[in-house]
Image (cartoon, rainbow, N blue to C red; front, top):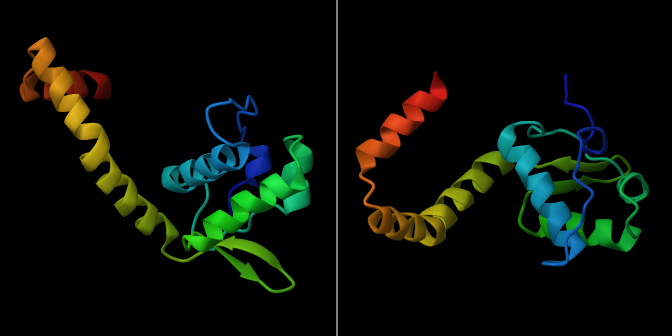
Length: 131
């Protein structure tokens, strides 16, 4: 059974000024996919529905959907609507891992060195969080 439509999943509608709203909407949809709240083949709400629910311009919602389609995350099924493309989660996961290793990890390593943290300290903290 598919998950609830994203408009019912609690999108944080406090848009910030750091980036365009369509990019924030894209990031939220990507997050839903990576978390498994949306699966390959699941439908997305219509542009009108998402625009109405989050009080944004339909052109903004359309731009977010177009961008996600251009990177092979969404597919339009004529006469039916937009759906999560098969393999989208795996592609997004690969891209996010590469981004993390290239952009985030070097900063984390630098910060660990500044604080004198060893990898074992992180493993220990991770294990404590899982208990």
